[in-house]
Image 1 (cartoon, rainbow, N blue to C red):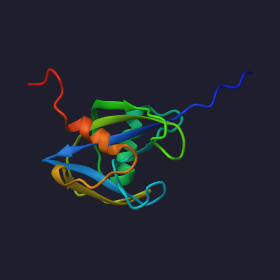
Image 2: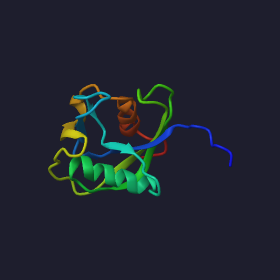
Image 3: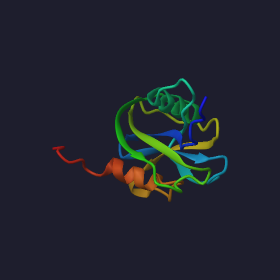
Image 4: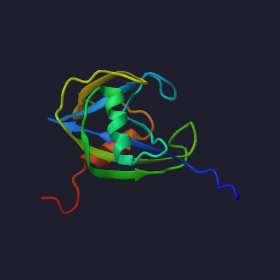
Length: 138
């Protein structure tokens, strides 16, 4: 049986904005340990990207939300120091509660959009894409 070529890992990120705040996690592991990031992670075998983003959000923040749209797909080489990765970033909606850091997130917080710290990976770009007015939107 022929071997399939090694390719990028598939990941998901959750962009959840509520009342002018974005839900972020402080990473508890490398890469970018101690830096703020969007909740997210690797898609597991047999899992849809939508269920993966819901799972990662729940594991890292204790909150539940559903994906309501795609912010974008990110595949720039070098965006993840662990190796090639393609991320689907989802816009999330749910009942915004008090987050609790869990899994590989040491902390989770709602941070005002106008006071965001520098983010891990290319999450600054994802956030900008998510808050930028979309064409055709009134």
